[in-house]
Amino acid sequence: RHNGTGTTSPVKCFKSKIDKQNPSCSLSVTASGVSFANTTDQGGSGVAKSGINKSTTAGYGTTSLGLSTGTVYGHVLDNAGNYGSCNRSIIETTKTYNKTTKTCNSYVSSYTCRKAASYYYYCNSGDSLSGTTCTHWNFEPLKYKNLSECQSHNGVVGCYPCLVNMYCFPHSGRSEYNAYFSGYSCSSVGGSYGQDAYCYKYGQSSCGSWTRWRTNYGYSFSDSTSSASSCSTGSSFSCDSNHNGSSYVSNCSLTSATCSSGTKLNNDYCAN
Image (cartoon, rainbow, N blue to C red; front, top):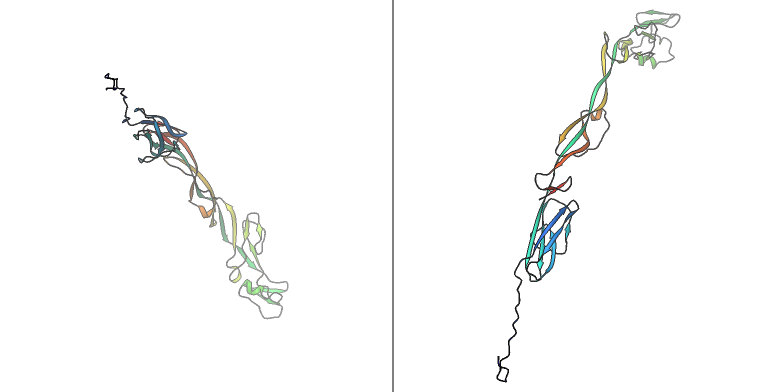
């Protein structure tokens, strides 16, 4: 280049570098969550911004996430406008539980047995008994159809055929309405003249020659255990006649948590 003096001066040249390289990144996944392991701008313009989300669409500002299943993406933008990304996949572990189930069951606790009571009628002093009829001195015989009719005429002369004595064998004692003998009792008279009178045995393991009148039940829980891939406990309840045959899960115990691939982070997640 001429400088006006007939001589030539040197020309200074400057070489500029244009950043056309995409930045790169890598993600660190631990039990605490996901964060950047590094972000690198290989073109030299420097990293302008970065961010982590669960979308392929770039997002910046958030640089860490908690653990959840799915793919996590890292996004990096350099000062030349070049974009780079990285990703990691998080999957759930395969779990096995020891599951305890409580089931309410009924069982026969005892039997109530019965047989017809032996009974007879008697009259008041001075009256005479003929069959089921008392004659009160010189009056006409008075006879009532049943016990309740007789009781509704309390104080009426002649209401004596309703006085009934019943025997509950094998006892030698005598009992009247609903009397109780050490494990045996007689029911009150119903129907005409004691035809529905019975003796009862309570809490028997068997009835023998007596008739099994009622089966008495108790209720209790039984426990069973099984292996399950998922488990959640249920609401407890009392074991009684209303819940006979019903069940609920009382306990879930984790026995194993494994990864089908990748690195185990905790009992819930694995990272690829």
